[in-house]
Amino acid sequence: MCGIVGYIGHRDAYPIIIKGLQRLEYRGYDSAGIALFDKDLKVYKKAGKVSDLENFVKDLKLEGSVGMGHTRWATHGAPSDRNSHPHSSGDRKLTIIHNGIIENYATIKETLLAKGHVFKSDTDTEVLIHFVEDIQKETGVDLREAVRIALNKVIGAYAIVIMSADEPDLVIAARKGSPMVIGVGQKEYFIASDATPIVEYTKNVIYLNDNEIAYIERDNLLIKNIDNTVQIPYIHELDLKLEMLEKGGYEHFMLKEIYEQPRSIRDCLRGRIYPQEGKVQLGGIKEYAEKLKNVDRIIIIACGTSWHAGLVGEYLIEEYARVPVEVEYASEFRYRNPIISERDLVIAISQSGETADTMAAIELAKEKGATIFGICNVVGASIPRTTHAGVYTHAGPEIGVASTKAFTAQVTVLTLLAFYIAQQRGMIAQSKLVEYLTELNEIPELVERALKSNDRIKEIAATFIKTNNCLFLGRGSSFPVALEGALKLKEISYIHAEGYPAAEMKHGPIALIDEAMPVIFIATKNSSYEKVISNIQEVKARKGRVIAIVSEGDVDVKEMADYVIEIPQTHEAFVPLVATIPLQLLSYHTAVMRGCNVDQPRNLAKSVTVE
Ligand code: M6R
Image 1 (cartoon, rainbow, N blue to C red):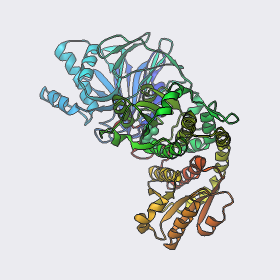
Image 2 (tube, helix red, strand yellow):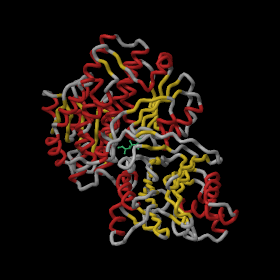
Image 3 (spheres, rainbow, N blue to C red):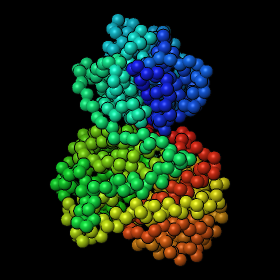
Image 4 (cartoon, helix red, strand yellow):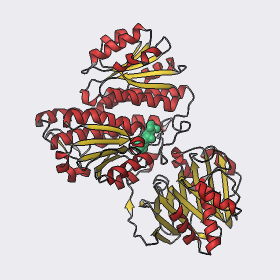
């Protein structure tokens, strides 16, 4: 949440910063602001989107080769001009942008108020910059030391960038719990919450670690720990292409990402399956192959869509590898006192690799001695750097706030993992693995075919754009698909939607069914097909409107349902990968027809770095 960009070098900072903010807008879009050093330290900020900030400054001549910018997802203080970042110290000489939460800001603020500080916003961030100013004034230390002392005293999460009117050739950046990347150029440095604003200028990046402070000058970068020890940074080479960050002719990033799925699933499978040999190979976890033979239990932790992928993983791992699996919301797990042993394997799933609750749950499981695997999309993010081992999803940057291709890539990895563990534990015959992997290898093609129903789905979406409620039902591993379908619809179209196991309907939700209630069934020809047909009949008997995702050539459901969407027939294990596609398209078209901003739905942010 919140996007941060900074620049110090020889180029004009404003265009770099504004473009960077556009790239990071998926992280928050309540307000935006910039600070530039142009003879003096100047701050411009505005409630609304980055485009509102651009309009606000369009007639000004913004110069300077040092600057920073922020796009906000509000935590402390409503979205408004005055709560927008950057925030300044009382004497206006220091200015800060911040991503995260300073948990003890109220106590610090009280002390500062007693000393006469006057605050212009409701934010925790403004308190932090006043605190730095206060330390400087009280102790006489320089800015570098004052920042270090302040950060030793604050509790919470932060990625911050600070500029000072008295030190125009210095930018200070620091992180704890919120991401920060530094791009290394020729006598220039770029700072950002992720690498997307940096990639067109340099491929060389440093991922700042927790508790590190970077003192950045045009031709010098010094990184120290907050205990003042010098750190030797490791320079990574980015594997990111500029075109991955653009819409490529699609109306929205979400639609582009839906259509990218044949490619992203193929990329996720590449080099990991050998269908003819009946072999799965997962390089990132190969050192743990022995451990997997003896693991007692697997606990999957995640949030939102990633949690839904985890539920699909539970079905697959239990079915094929025969290891008991529990799937937990990271936000609940971290505040329980869960029973975890060294024989447990914890799998953290996260697209961004930065979700605060998932990070905290990992730390807890680690303290209790579990082995932790990560399934992440963003390379170099905090989660893959904190887990013992892991498997990247290789879906490429996902910019639409609603997760689509990341979900199917996570499910693909979990499918591979289920077969990999089954293989290690001798739970699956080689010949069976040949069969499964051959079919899995064809999934990108089936997804491609499923996408061909787009026009039909658009017509169906048009019939229920005025609805206020919707039910998604599925059985077995199609139940998490129903949950994911409901989440997609509610987050981008603001229609209330619930996902349920189809059989649970009669234990409550059935009371909601009337002529106005669309019920979306995943009714493919698999083991629970007959049972789902009974559930459809129960809905029809109560005059509900049925939209069914069916296997190509289905006749029975077609006779009962108001609308059907056909998807190619596949083995039960792979249905989630194909059945998800029409649900994504249904949400997308419904939201577009309702005039919603599908890429930036209200109140949401792509990466939830606050708890
Ligand atoms: O980056 P993560 O996968 O950890 O994010 C978890 C959730 O915040 C995320 O899946 C969220 O639910 C999306 N808006 C779903 O589309």
